[in-house]
Structures are given as structure tokens and as C-alpha cells.
Amino acid sequence: MRQEKDAPKRSDAQRNRESILEAAVAELTRSADVALSLIAKRAGVGQATFYRNFPNRESLVLEVYRHEMQQVADSAVQLLESREPDRALREWMDHLARFAMTKAGLADAIRQATSAPGSPAKPGHSPVSAAAELLLRAAEEAGTVRPGVTGDDFLLAIAGLWQLDPHGDWQSRAARLLDLVMDGLRAGAPRRPAPGPTDQAHPTTQAIRTRPAGRSG
Image (tube, rainbow, N blue to C red; front, side, top):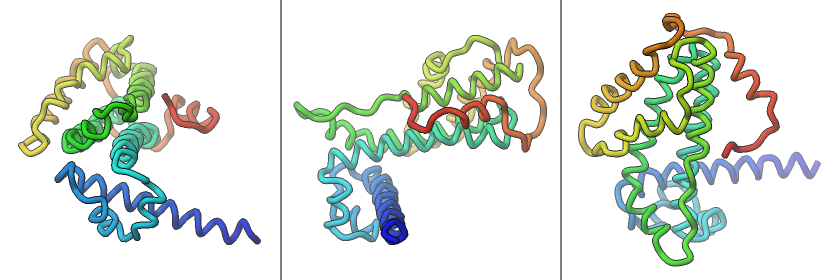
């Protein structure tokens, strides 16, 4: 009986946390110095609930960054479940571009959170790199991208995303850049990409499901 009562509490707590993170992305992107009380108000939670989740600005900013990055990484498996691997990879690049623009908007807040002596370190890119590896290996197995490209190679190739102005026409510029990268990945592939999505999960995705639960990186 106690477990049944605790379950809704845990669900409410998770919703509150997600609401805070969603509000924080929007507000911190506008201003690194936004009042935490304004974020709490936009999230629809009280001050006590807010500080129970995030005791200070630094913990909130770094969790926003980590959460957004993990969301992008997790989308790789979801895309492989419904698309051919090369199409999943290209669509995932668009997710990554949106993350890059969010990161650009949060840049000042991240710098403030990590620059003071004794501040926590900024989260690494391990989840994104692992997701890139997953997609590249799936597409390589399908014969639709050139073999041997690593996740680190890929991140270096798309580094130009982080140079785009999030307040300018970044969508069209990002699309051109990512199309060029995708064309390069397809060059030298053993076979031409098959048209259209598939409803069958790729073997690489099925293998991921059998691994113990836990975050990558």
C-alpha cells in the first residue's frame, strides 16, 4: 500500500523537475542572470520545491545542459526504430543542431556556473559521442555510409554548428552544412541508401535494448 502512495509522489516530483528544466532552458537562453524565482514561477512550482531540486544556480544550469544533451543522445535509438540508419543519422543531425543553438544561448550561464574557483566542471560530450557512434555503426552495417568514421570524426566534421549565430538564419545554414557532411559520409558507401523509413528496429538498436540499464559515457 505504501508503494502505491509513493508512486504518485515520485511522478509529481519528476513532473516538477521537468517543468523547472523546461522553464530554465527558455529563461536562461534569454538571460544568464534571470532570477531563479522567475524560473520557478514559469515552471509553476513553489520556492521550496525549486530549491529542493536545485539548491543553487550552478546546479540548475549544469543540469539543464546535461539534460538537453541527454535528450539529443536518447533520440538516436528512437530514430533507429523507425527509419533506415542513414536517414536516422541525418535527422539526428537536426536534433544536434537545435541542441547547439540551445547551448549557444546558455553559453553565458554555463561560463558563469563553471568559471569560479571550486565550481563543478561542465558535463562532457560522452552521451552525444556515443549516440553518434551508434548511428554511424548502424549506417555502416547497412552499407549506406563510408566505413571507419568514428564519433569523434563526426563531431569534428560538424563543429561549424557551434559557430552559427542562434539569433540569425541558423536553420538554413545548418541544413546546408549538415547536408554537405551527410553527402561526405555517403561517398564511398558500399551501396546506395534505401529510400523510405522502415518499421523494423535495426539490429544495432535491438542490441542496445539488451544491455544493462544506465547512462552512456
